[in-house]
Amino acid sequence: MKKVVKITVGIVLALVVILVGFFTLVPEVERDLINPFVPKEEVYVQINEEPIDARRYEYTLIGYTEDDDKKEVTFSSTRVLKENAFLIVTTKGSYVEKWEEIQVEELPDRVKEQLNSD
Image (cartoon, rainbow, N blue to C red; front, side, top):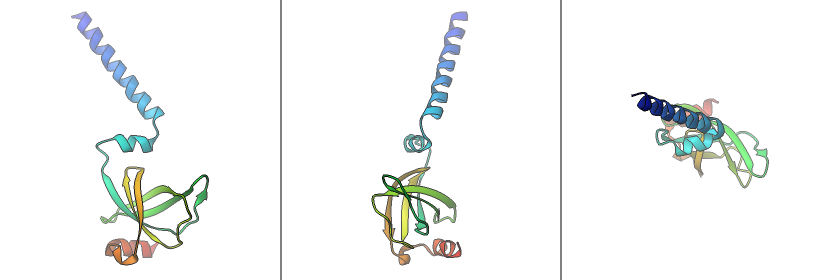
């Protein structure tokens, strides 16, 4: 009986060490990418800030989902994007899967109101 308890405690401790290591060492973006419980969302943003120029042009913008949820997204581009352009950004948590420029007519009405009020 003692042997079974020791093995069980050892397995639980090993799992705890693995999980703590995973959440400590793996960046949030990669965790969101592989986590099956993080849903995909489409966030609508407007290019209203200058990018940070590193190797790529990085943007951090506030956007809105179709459900009026406010969300900050960070993504990069190989070029400077057109000022005041509208984008639809597909995210999975903090991971940005893709972005695409859209016309103002393609924005949902509720999102249009939110972006105009900012």
